[in-house]
Length: 413
Image 1: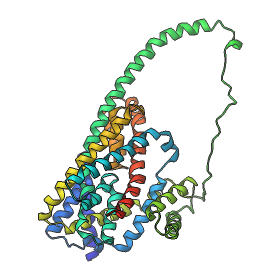
Image 2: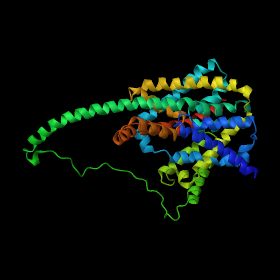
Image 3: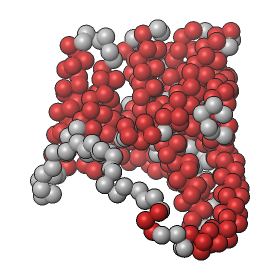
Image 4: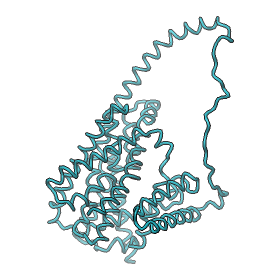
């Protein structure tokens, strides 16, 4: 009975957070509301061990952290990343700008351990927050455990509305340019009709035509397919477990030269590209949300050490580092915007994906296009122009860079 009640409370906090986020159209992040509920609960009547009592204990987390990173590898479309390489460069430059300002100027005001514990979640969201929290616990630096959680919760409060504002400005620019191009095309159409009438008098043999036999070579990796009746959730989970086991075994053979989480991510990418793992494999297996809720609950459980008297000591450095980090993103993305053919608004929005990643980048972009587009054609046009840049920016920062940064920062604590 106690386990069921604990699960009900934990999922209730998650539910309320999602409802508030939906009601506010994602301007109030769900993680902020959920964290606030956990914090108030721990200060009042909620037991401090409620998360492990709800089944999200040590064994669950040890499995979750590795398989989720393998899953993240299946979300990465290498062709899309290569096609949108400019967005990747800008997004990663934003991460570099964040690190430079927070580690540079921030060091003048805050101690080394506070900065190292707080910065990785600022450049990678949930995954980096989890890695830093687990690392701090493993090194018994319990006094700093609350900092990655606080950074993860707080930075989205600025990231969501700021990203939406940048995308709205970009939408206005795109629609204005589209309207201007449409006007030119209309004018040229009249000239084209006269040209066609004249060209109709030219013999067909004199008109150059494209060689239909010329085709660009295509490379396709054949996937391992089974009949639908056998391609079950258990089979998908078996494959994920097999890839995760190979990744962790490889990491052990390397004796920690490369962090095991990076190896899991790389193996996920390879297995996906070879066709062994499907796109978003854990979602297709029906367990992704359960694992994510468990990971979130584990992170929020660390708020049980936060007391009211500690808040000022946490909030001042966290808010200050967020401001410095976002300023670093803006400066770095602005410097590369024009050379890479981006507007400053689109470049900054791509860099800001480091604050939340998928699916928030997908949700915010869709909401903006629904507001700014007046016709289905305009909405689709805005999506085509902005969504790929936002998605690859989030994948490059949250899925790759954040894991690398967190693993490095854990070594320099």
